[in-house]
Length: 187
Image (cartoon, rainbow, N blue to C red):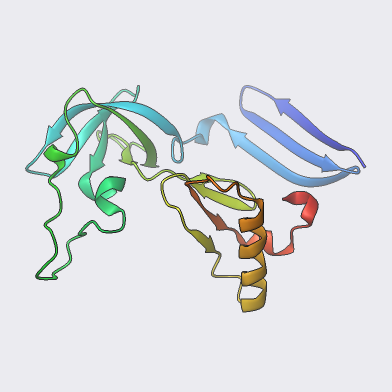
């Protein structure tokens, strides 16, 4: 069996088909008019920190600087950080001016496209989605799609993924629903 990738590019759209043994396995169509930025990852530069709004503006090469709120900064959200909880002995959340400084490079992902006069919304919690998996480089857990309801199947998928991961892998994964029926060859 042979796999083929067919690509057709026009000024209006790009079409990509993945064929296996002559059967279409996947079809992706991207139209130039509706191309968005959501999911894109950029190495940005902090342009301005606004302590009063607990946010920052980050230059990522667009017409307008993008917006990054302290709640969308991974350092603020990772386990052990207080996310606004009310526990009496919890440390107060770090203010944005102690996390970011003007001119600092920062790796970000677009959460929301720019609209009108507003720039794009950003996050430092990155995720890279594939057909079977979502890779989370900063979050070292393995999650399973909630649509996979069979507990034995969930445990088997989790174990299969753990076997495939190198021992020094620091990132985490989310197994998508499609992974439930995937053959060993797909992994």
